[in-house]
Length: 109
Image 1: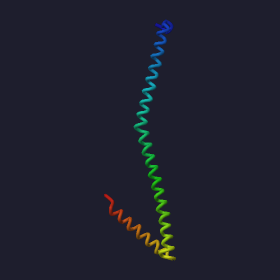
Image 2 (image 1 turned 30 degrees about the vertical axis):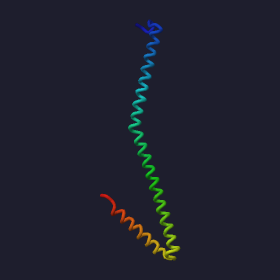
Image 3 (image 1 turned 90 degrees about the vertical axis):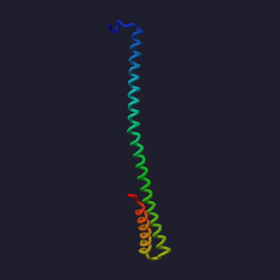
Image 4 (image 1 turned 120 degrees about the vertical axis):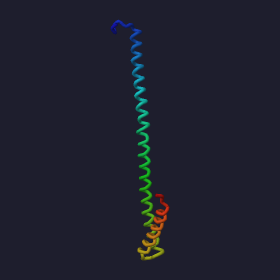
């Protein structure tokens, strides 16, 4: 039986079957791509976002520590040890060393 011999209703049924098959295939591909994206791209995106926030926080904390140290040394130089910056440096260095020794002793190996 050739295509010319098919009736009009048979042709429309065949066309509907082809369209249905195409939509099923498109939905299946969409589902597979969605599952793949959910299992790969989303976790990587979350990890990169977290890494970015950690880097920003570390950078800001470093800036705050540096500016705070400078401010403390200037205040100590102006009020506690006028004209003796070495004393301000020694005091702040001793305090930071004690803080470092304390946190080092609390580490878990």
